Amino acid sequence: MFANYTWALGCLSAAAFLLLAYFFDRLTERRPLLCLCYGLLLGGIAGNMFDRFFRPGVIDFLFFYFRDFKHSWPAFNIADSAITCTIIIILLDGLRQGNKKSPDSASPAEPHND
Image (tube, rainbow, N blue to C red; front, side, top):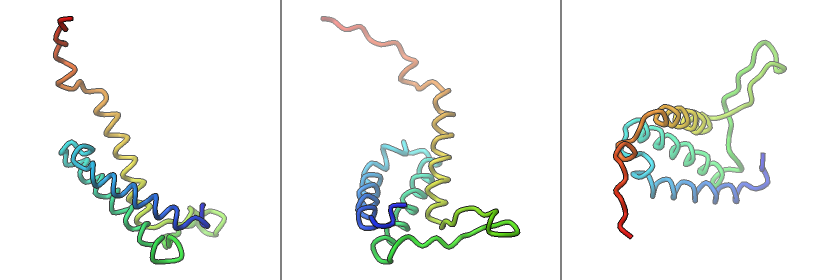
């Protein structure tokens, strides 16, 4: 997908990497699980970005099939796995955290004097 846009995707990956690295503390909220997740995400982005800039494209080397190639999973690499697993864990954590009340929302709002 987008095989003819390797440099554009590489630049987009570089921008995403720099933004995630810059906002790392804010995104992770200093929670160990989120630190691990965003670290994996940064590693996955860096791995695919390296392939895009220094190879003809991203190299997918993991290919699984059952009996014949008609029953196969699309080829992928470890960077793709890191990105996918990270997104799933962050979404599940967000759903779990969404059910908990934050300390700020539990306190009543102070009245404003206009």
